[in-house]
Amino acid sequence: MQLRGLGDRAIDLQPFDVLQFEGAARVEGVLPRGAVKDFNVIFDATLCSAGLAFHDGPGHSLCASRATLLVNVGTGACSCEQSGVATALARYDALLIEGEAGSTVRWSGATRVALVLID
Image 1 (cartoon, rainbow, N blue to C red):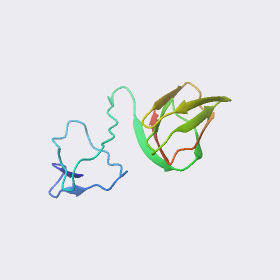
Image 2: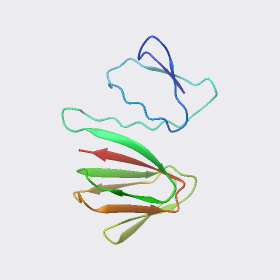
Image 3: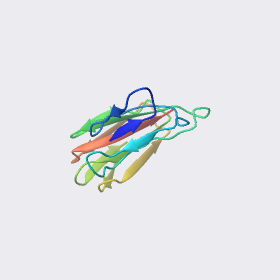
Image 4: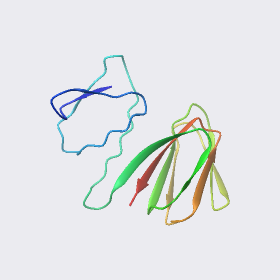
């Protein structure tokens, strides 16, 4: 995907690149190589802050945020475990984890997950 409108030059994004910009920006997305799936995190900055990171393969993350959204963006199913409770996630399923700061979330079986940290 190529984004135009964030400066003098277009920005070429590769798969799973993360680019943060103001939601009020007048941006145009161009698809020079065909269709894509686009993952957006849109939030009201007067109410919270948010960040996005992609992780490859099985792994874990410390929940230091008010809420964490784990999204299975891999090619197959995965399992997510937090506080001893396992949840199965099909491709593109999401799990919202709230109010458990300091706990660890583990996932397995996925080739890639997206973590959205919300404070």
